[in-house]
Length: 318
Ligand SMILES: [Zn+2]
Image 1 (cartoon, rainbow, N blue to C red):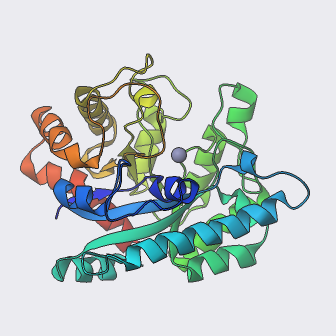
Image 2 (cartoon, rainbow, N blue to C red; image 1 turned 120 degrees about the vertical axis):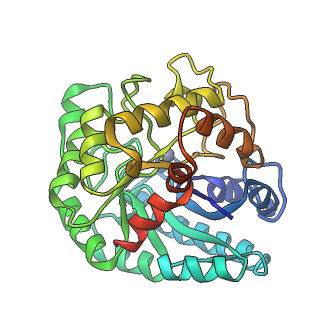
C-alpha cells in the first residue's frame, strides 16, 4: 500500500452509467484494480460539467447534482467497507492504512456550484469534501479557467474566490488550481496561507497546453509547499496526443529539475478522458508506470515521496 492518486473522475462516470459497481467494473478504476496498483489512497472527484445544466436554476441544479453524486459514491464505497474507507484527514488515512484498508479522499471539481454561497462550501465540508478544484474550463463565481486567450489567462480570482480561499484554509480543505487561469494561480499563491495543489497538471515546457504549469508556476508551487499530480491525459503529456509511460516519467523528471523532489505527485485523471493514445489502460497497470518513473533516475526514497509522502505532507499541513 504505497500509491496515492490525487484525481480521477470515476464517480462522475458511475453517475452517468447507472448500475456500475465500484468493486469491479470496466472503467479505469475499481477497488480490485486499486488493490493491484497497491493503492494507499484514491482521491475521488465529484465532477460537475456545467453544460449539462441550463436555465435560470442551472447552478442550483448543479449543486444538488453534486450532492447526489457524493451520496452515490459513498453508497458504493459502503458496499466494500472491509477494503476501503473515507479519510477526512491525514490521521484517518494513516489509521485506515494501519487497519489494512485503502482510503478515499472526497473531492469536488468545479467550484462554480457554490453559486457565490459560502453556506454551500460549509455543507460540502460537512459532506466530507476535503479538496475543491476551484474552476473547471468555464468562468465561475470563483474565477476564470485556463485558456489560450492571453487576456482570459491573465484574469485573477474574483472577490468571492478570495473569500473561498480564506475559508478553505480555515476549514482545512485543500485548494486545487488545476484548470484555473494563470492569473488565478498567482492569486492563490498570494492569498493561500497553506500549501495548495495542482491535482492533475503537467509541465507546459514539455507539452504546451494551457492546462499545464509553467516552470515559474512549478517553482512557486514548490516554494509554497504544494504538489502537482502528473496527469495521464495523452494531450497533456504530448502535443500530438500519442503518449507512453516514458512521457509520464519525462514530466516527473522535468518537474523535479525545476521544482525539486517535494513537489512531485500523481494525479492520473483516470476515467476523465477518452481521447489520445496511452500504452496503459487502467490503474491496474500502474506497475508499468512505477518502473518507468524509477528508471528515469529516482531513488527509492524519492519514489516514496512521489508515491505518497508529498501528498501526505500537504494533507498534514492543512
Ligand atoms: Zn479535470
